[in-house]
Image (cartoon, rainbow, N blue to C red; front, top):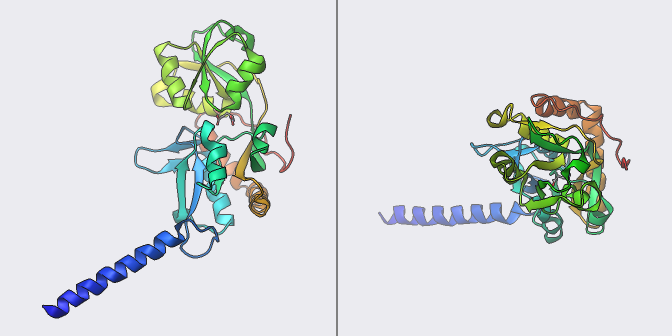
Length: 276
Ligand code: GLU
């Protein structure tokens, strides 16, 4: 009896020690052994970054993130995905919540003042998603109309600055909320990158209901966001992205994630070359 108690006690101590070790290593980013790496993605963008009902993750950004993590020394099981909504991305990096972000994150000067970017790894274009019978055919048609986009996105900023300054723009937390608004009729259009809109339009529950207008309203150069000043990580991620294109993993990820939605993406961008 006494012996059993001692054994149980030492087992408890051992368990504590083990979990302490696991936790202690959790935030380290050395990339070795059992350490974890936290990576920011979107949770609600089908084909790009999606948390599935079973808790798994899918999408082009998820595949890019997984490839990059591997090159940094982390196996898929060592990745902890964290949701980084459009408006939260710069802060998540500054605070050190995540090591890097792959979340339909366009490179621009305003963001470059706060974070660093590797890439670009994809070129998308801002477009409009409307009901199938909508008459909206170009950006200017949005003036006077109800439009939805997401807080902290380049899409919302572009509408205010140039596409349709007279539109009644609603900014919500995520695009899935905009889709709900489009479905209910409280907005006439949703605007963001064609890569994202194509994924929504192809979802079973929306099939036949919405169409992409097909306007290339901007160039969105997707980058991998990194904490400002972390040049070593930027260099490593750039090398990983180059390798991903060269060994055809990039094209495989494109076919797998954009194929089902019929999204015709641009060819792989050159690292360090931003299409203005
Ligand atoms: N790519 C654009 C951006 O970075 C729109 C998509 C998004 O909000 O993530 O703002």
